Amino acid sequence: MTVSKTELAAKIDVAEWFMLRAHLERGGVVVVDGLLDLAEVGAAVAADEVATIERWLAAGLVGKPTAQQIESWDAAQGKRFLCLIVSPYVLVQEESPANG
Picture 1: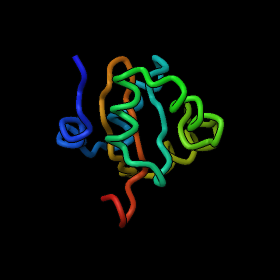
Picture 2: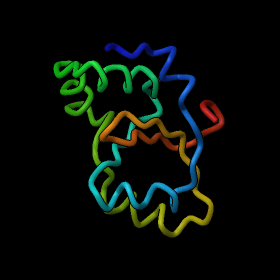
Picture 3: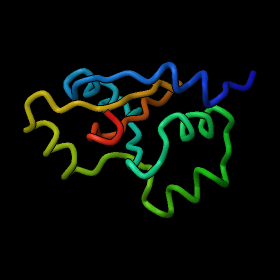
Picture 4: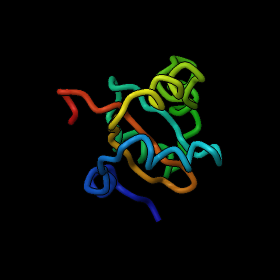
């Protein structure tokens, strides 16, 4: 069954970093650059659009969080993210005035 971008957009939520940290421990957190639409990325992951995802990976627009990002988020009290679960991943995007 294909999940639409519209359906996924309705499932985007906001969560503080401490709530997402457990997903990091199991390797499930994927960071999505603010230049991309979180629901669009979620739809591509759900549909297993390998070529699109590989293009975003190569451009550095999606990927696992870096050690520097994790350290920064751990130090920032109340750091918030937009998040979208596309099992087994939790896609996260830093909250900004434009998207949050």
